[in-house]
Image (cartoon, rainbow, N blue to C red; front, top):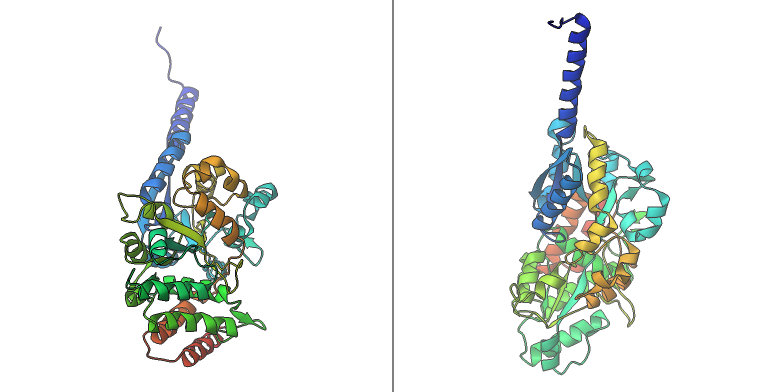
Length: 416
């Protein structure tokens, strides 16, 4: 007896096909994520994290894009309003929340993060993603700059301990140069880029300076002036490599790893790379301490942290948050703690995280609690560009420190 293909059966079949198609669409949700190519986690590490996430979530695929840090901001802004053709997850710097909040580029994820987790995270890390009551993402890269030193070079000069103040850094550098241990003991990332502002901010922190006075940006306060004067003096005395004025962080790493410097200011990622004999001629001789202050026992630091946010136009915010939650989770961060330290306080007491980088962990415990933030303003890009130009002109000897920092302050007033 033949079965009859009734309207009811046809409807059921259509419903089944529709449901199956919907399930297939759900099973193939693709989210696009924008990351940077240098510093902190390597591209290979991020790809491994994404692959592990996809195995746990077979219904979600991650499309990764990597750009240099210098292109990251403009990529995010350019994708604004792109809808399905834009990004779902974006990596953003600590200096951008004011601007991104003003132009509503990221979703407020305040309700997605519970209070218990916030208490387990370093305050400096959370400050990276919070602006005027809005939480624009989850902190991911918790970073600051440290003072690296070459143990063998210091020993050769008869120096028994690393410097505890920036004055001692200068004195030890002069001694190293006088004894012919190294031509230029100091190397920095002073190219006309954000790296220059980060080094400057570290020194402003060291000399007790601030960027705001009576609610207004000011680069002529005593601490801020001491910072730029220290930078210029180190060049004038011939202890800073003059090429520093063209260097970014990777140039600093390479110079230090090649044995061309006794001291370097750089991010966390350099520690294990400089200690890797396949990448470094000074492996095993790398020392690290918090960037010093203006007195023994004090530390200085810049907030170089970054967060992961959900783009406002994302069509897959829930899946985007699943991915963000996974790669910022404590187990994942602990697993990849060799190039970027976790945002979770308790990780720093974990023997597995400490192993092989005990000196870095000891420095981090101190530095991460004193980080100075760069100016918070919605017009940060223009402010930073102006500050970079003035700092460069001073370091090139084209302008006095007083005139340059007064000009930077006037520009800041116009941008308010």
